[in-house]
Image (cartoon, rainbow, N blue to C red):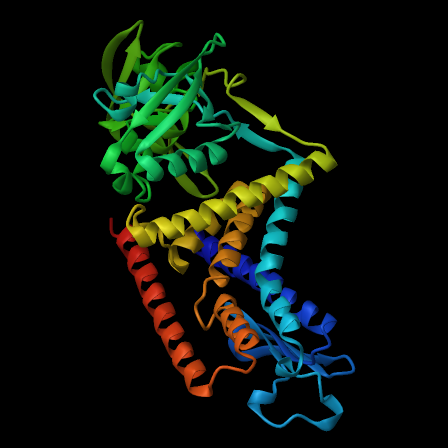
Length: 450
């Protein structure tokens, strides 16, 4: 229940912030271009709070449905314009000004992403080095020669310092030709090249949550090696010792210490079988998980502390003020290009359409990132802001991109498109959005029910 409320609140905050940024772009550029703004609304439906200000008596409001927003300009196509406002209506301004206003919304979304990434980079980002964890035998990764602990220092010609840039590069190469060229580095600093070849399996591997299992390796995480035993804890009573690496709890694989915490926390007071490795030999032991109360909730407790030294795989990535600007611009550009390419690949069938997410899935991501802290939530906002900017530039009539197409046609033919053509375009656009949202909801529900 708490997670659901957190997700809902985080989702509303995220959408409200990003919609406000987008609509402010339209609003401020419209005012700079000499247009009269009638209303600036965050949300749709019945207004919850409204106020009026300025010489133009612009109405600002917060509406009941926080799934969008709009800026309403004075427009001669909607009715007669007061002679005092002649020339200030949207359709009375030069076409270049109209296009600038339409472009401003997506542009402000990209600007927001740059600022968000700048704040993250200048403050420092805790970063896990992209490295190879457990490898499944007879998998694409195993056949390519990947080894446990290999650091991924490059994908193709792209140098990779974190998992985000690594995944973007890996997916880009994989959907292009079914091959992932890697530059790997051992803990001793020796570099070598390896290529994971997936061929025609690339489209399947783009489905959400499939990539690493499909390739046959997991990202490196601190293994569940016992570094300390709690006195009178379940592990000590069962005979586990320092140096043992736990590999499974009741048949549930444990690849990392975080996996161990998750497996144990839901089994408070229950008898389980723990599989572990000691001195290279696989063993198992039966024990009863201990209990502890945290914030009024009973959780399982094994009574161990981790031994792994993550110093060589984990670092704080930090830039100076100017370097942060360059890094933020580069990250925003790379994410934008990646989003556009993935959308194009979906149309050609090279990328799974299961990647299209609706509000349910976005809310879950929002809640998860918010619980991890401000930095994670800010990074989430940057990614969603970029996606919002790209989607609004699509040439769909009800979106900014479609309206830009209408204005461009008017510029080329010297007169506006006929009212009938615009109405038909709007109807087609609405139907396209309804189909897209229906598909997104279907994907969300399918993920929930497995």
